[in-house]
Image 1 (cartoon, each protein chain N blue to C red):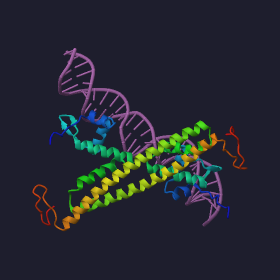
Image 2: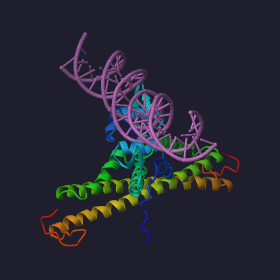
Image 3: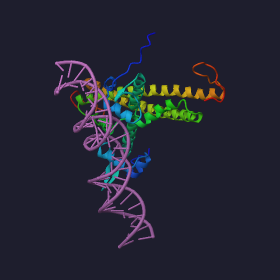
Image 4: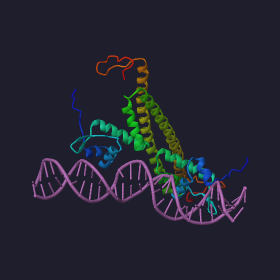
Length: 147
Length: 147
DNA sequence: ATCGCGGTTGACGTTAACGTAAACGTCAAC
DNA sequence: GTTGACGTTTACGTTAACGTCAACCGCGAT
């Protein structure tokens, strides 16, 4: 096994690898979400930083704020703390999971409604091409050129 | 069938029914998301407004911006427009659905990771109570009082 | 008449998550 | 040596989604 995997990245590399700007990475660092090493002034990002960044961005897509994401990342670091700390960690973790499941339910409901509506409109178009339109009051067909 | 269902609500009623402030409802109106009737100056919210509000709030929970929610609500109104309009509506609708499905995948992935981590910590606690802790280097048990 | 309660319209304040610009350092290339 | 690409810090600007506050109106109760 070739053990040469400690690749590192400049800020710009990492940034456009993930489709964000350097400014964004600095901002995340200001918020304590990532702490890359330094070579003098310059930031050097490691593989672990990549992983953290992926977490952060997924957290954002999921709708979390940066501070919430920070807390969740902290959870992983507290894993080696005191016993009571760990219990708290587990609790917070489960809360988050519940919130996420609720959010997923919301999303599913939204998807279903959109799908229903979408099919309704799609059928409307199809039926129109077949001249199947009817007046809502009388139920009589409208013919092909009536809106 | 009793046909007396056109109940209406004041701004404060509707607001605290949904756990928001009156200011929020006015803001949504400013953004064109709801347009309640008026009795003189005062806003009168109908059942339909309730439904729209529920949509809006779920949209927010799902992570949409107010303008995105506005577009989605517009979709429903465009349902009776011209043929080309309807085709566009269906397209946008399907885009939204795809985006939502992607977001759901993100959520599921997050949930899984959190669950894994959660169980890991939980097991750590349980094993500690059984004195099953080991040194990572030697694999030797640590005894009951070693962190 | 004057409370208090609920409603209204501005209009300015606030927070989050960056964008943007200024002013400067560094190092390789021309 | 200066130009250009990349980096740094500092600091002000921006947008979204409201919060907050002032000033006002209408109305039933006291």
